[in-house]
Length: 210
Image 1 (cartoon, rainbow, N blue to C red):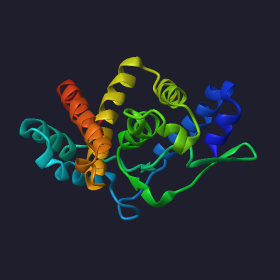
Image 2 (spheres, rainbow, N blue to C red; image 1 turned 135 degrees about the horizontal axis):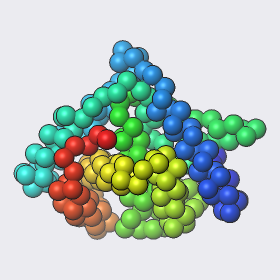
Image 3 (cartoon, one colour; image 1 turned 180 degrees about the horizontal axis):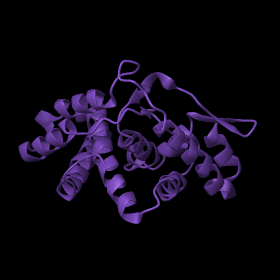
Image 4 (cartoon, rainbow, N blue to C red; image 1 turned 180 degrees about the vertical axis):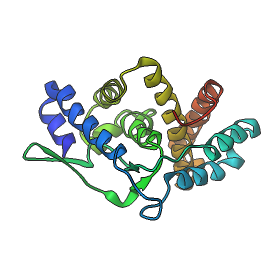
């Protein structure tokens, strides 16, 4: 797994993230016919619908409207792209855990990557050590390096990051509530974080695609 290589060779982070980034670009350039795979947008719409009772009305309405208007390019998205799901064999990257593969906008993959590298462990930084064997500061650097390698333009990079974070926090908030987070201290902290981040980010964008 790429995570094991990063553990063993931390000085090669940029080299390994370059492999990770190139594979992601290949995924996002692979055409998919709608009848072949589900639409990731439908999954996102369901995340947002679930959150209606838990967000201020104006915030939820804006989030719902932007998700409904999300563009649906006919290219592959993995849906759960993180460093445990990329294997390296004889120098070649191999993608595993394909059950979340769909078609749609690549911002959904960036949302998943953000959660894996930053969001899920934002309240408890030990989370990345548990799941990937990597310190939080390393996974945060992976996220930042991926953005730098994927996007040439800084403005587009920042725009994509904000939109990925909005989708990511919506996904994480729903996931935490569904796992009884409203009734546990850790869950309550994570839900409060999601609400705070969404209130900060939503005024900054008018659409979720880029």
